[in-house]
Structures are given as C-alpha cells and as structure tokens.
Length: 113
Image (tube, rainbow, N blue to C red; front, side, top):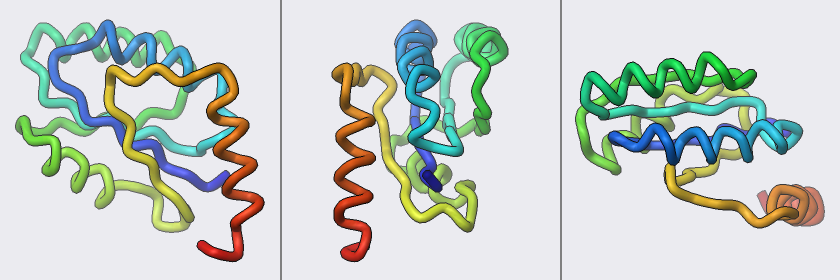
C-alpha cells in the first residue's frame, strides 16, 4: 500500500520502541515512516539507537516542539506518489487486527478516495 505514517515525538524513545515494534509486525500496510523528533539531545541519541535496531525504512526529521509543525513537516516530506497518510501519536497501541481492518476498509472504499 502506498501509505506514509507520520509520527511526531518528543522525549519518549521508550514509547517509540513499542510503536515501531508494532509497525514492524505490520509493514505490509505502509511503505514509509516519517518520524519528526523534537527531543532533547540525550533522547535523540536513544531514539537513533532504537531506529538503527528496527529493520524499517524510517525518515528521521528534527524539528522544534509543536505538534502541528511536526505534522506539517511530515506531510511536506512524504513520498509524492503515496495515496494516503496517517498521523500516529508516539504513545499509540494498536489492537491486534487494526492494520488488517484498515486495509480492508481502504480497499473496499477505494473509489471514494
């Protein structure tokens, strides 16, 4: 699926780790992760280590703190040929079949979008 996942974050690398693990298990659903980080220097280092360990294509962008600014930076940096984007907060926990259900919905309603 041509979908970008945009994740703003600030000083919560442990939350990102859990989220990225969930996304790894469902990597069929998207082709891009854009992580916009406004963390302090220590948490930037932790985040970089986490990203290195996760086998996902993650575009890391630094930003000053502002959820709307971070989301807008994500939109500006997403792949131009992607049909969809999804904002995901760094503390979100998806239910087991969430991605399967989202994919079914998108495929079923493709003509609307």
